[in-house]
Amino acid sequence: MLWMGGVYLGSLATLLLNSFFYLDGFTGLVVRRFTLSTYQQLFTPSNMDIVFRTAGMALAVTLATIILAFPLSYYMSRYASKRQKGLLYLAVLLPLWSSYLVRVYAWKLILAKEGILSWFISHAGAQGLLDALLSNPVIGGSSLSLSPIGIFVVFTYVWLPYMILPIHAALERVPRSLLEASSDLGAKPLQTAWNVILPLSFPGVVAGSIFTFSLTLGDFIVPSVLGNSSFFIGQVVLSHQGTSGNIPLAAAFTMIPIVIMIVYLLIARKLGAFEAL
Image (cartoon, rainbow, N blue to C red; front, side, top):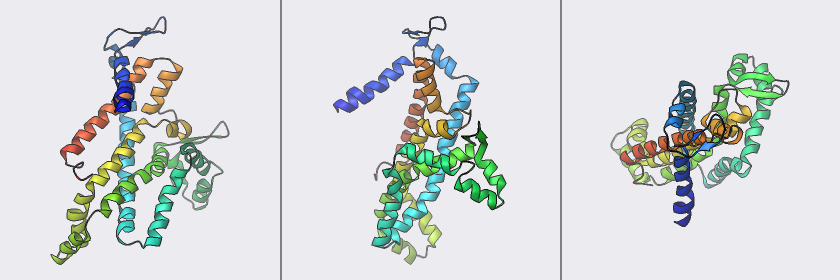
């Protein structure tokens, strides 16, 4: 309670307070006077383009991870033997044992001009797919710049385990008797999946989406290491806080993911997703 109330919530309150200050353009110092000018600066077309780009990417990554995670989680919970389940658990968790930076830089090597994926796509005659992944394959001879599709692929890979584990845990709690009853009553497999399995596993989907959506919203490493000049919220916060020293604007940008997640959690609670967690 001391940590949550004094440190975590206190830090968020400090961020909110700083977002109502402003940076003096002449002295470059933060003026600690209440004003809405920072939020006026925030809601400019260029800044809102960054917000929509980041939120759109977070939504796309969340949907993709759900589509990929659900079949695998269902197989693990219903059909895999104990040995297979152990191996699949290991395969899901193994990437999390390595450093996040290592995984990101590994993708940089995979997608480099001399990387294995670029080599395979080029020799397979799918140059269009390579062009879709890479924005500028080589800049200055060694740097890599991914297109939004390439960034999306890396984000999906990085956050996929955080979706698989909650969905699998939710599917493990679905009684087999309900599936058998649905089949006995004449329901087809797709009807059972839609009317029985999906509603009962929905809390796990919501739990996983909280991770993938929020982590994508605030991430700045993947866009910084692999992205192009199109900024995401995390990069903007880092730039304003570390380079330009515009802490009020950085704090105002930080409030956007917080507000988005609050609205998302309220909607999830309204849908009853937390009742079975």
